[in-house]
Image (cartoon, rainbow, N blue to C red; front, side):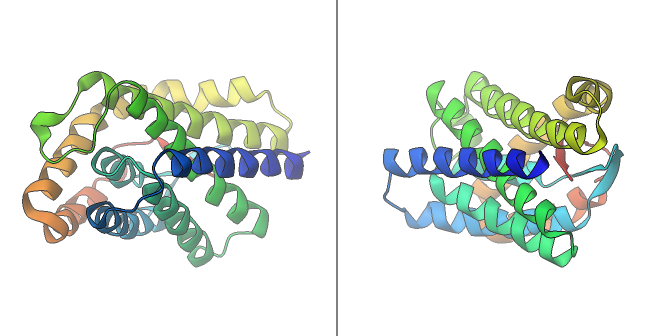
Length: 220
């Protein structure tokens, strides 16, 4: 059953990515630069993952990932997070099925989050003053729900437990920390738009030192 589940997640990830590509196949240089920058930071953050229980683990990689989506709400950000996830899984020497699943569910979560962001009027951010509270909240909420539901479903299948109970056990207690991360994402956007690639990497160092504070981006 788990193999069929992973296959469905892969199909959903590919389909949502294609939808984004068809909406805007062009690749602006500034989007590519942002995607590469935050993709590298995401890889490092995933390498510093921590356990959340029930065979799931968490990381701070969602912060640079969502910052990238706000700056470049584009298919290249999805490709970047897929490559970052793949690199992190290989470096962690995880089993093949987990590598495939985590490489698929992260871009699926981001692609759906970007669709929600665009639907609610979100635009590529060049400054923090351009941000829309509603579109950013939609991006965060859809990413968070997709990510946690996908992982809870997989854990439920593998452990034989009810997926809803797994989701509730791992998610509800972390909600206050999840929402506290929103200002951090906006600060990341501000740093990048003001100080560029160097500023983003400088901010990443203390952010990764706080990795135990936020628990939203799940993996197997």
